Image (cartoon, rainbow, N blue to C red; front, top):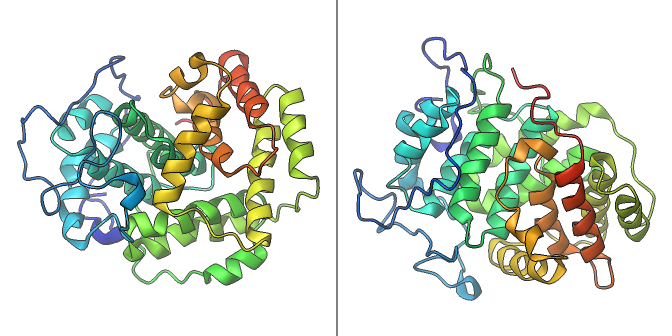
Length: 338
């Protein structure tokens, strides 16, 4: 991953074989507000967030940035100092390397790693969806949530894989992908379109290659109503398949109605409010962050998706079922990890 600035995947020198996922001590907050800046802040002045997960320099209701990632940030954000620990699944090393980074810049770095590490596997695609959902939800545990996204992206990356070479990648247009995408391809297209303004136009090819690769599955369309699928997910106590169908149906509903993916400002603000209003108990919101591999990041993603539910949809029952699955359902943490 070294030297992969501006989403330009390059071949690595040497054999970076993954070791076991390094354990992070619970509650090990890597606070970047303690003044221990061992590197220059990324960007002009650095953005960062306060302890409540809000931008230090920008209020949620007046954030008019079209591109969170600036061209000046590329070199530092994609430096080997950050990415080598993730390639080696050394989460302690990554925490140390990221200690001086403002949280927004840290999120950009983790999101880029997840996108470049994407492969058409369940864990890998959900790792990318998770970084988008984390941006939407944020909250008091924002920085810890970013580190869990980093852990998940690192664990889900196949250790023998090489970063993709993307300079000359020919991907279909958004319009063509939109006309063909179903199932997971639709979810990845929705994720890609939402991340382009946050990660920059230079990452468009890397992002759109995700739904392009998912098209090979040729999944059938879902014809049940969103309300019926929500009730089925509740009846099945938040099973992976039933909740995934809710995600797909919601995105299909929005896209067919011409509703664009939520922009960063609206998505983040409404997701926070919806998650607070829909959560059945304080224990549910306290469950974030958590080890995302346990349920393919379903709980985190669900907290983001309920912000997009239409009026009258049973968001509270849906989230309660998702949290029940997280607590009592089968763990997928050891599935497909090499």
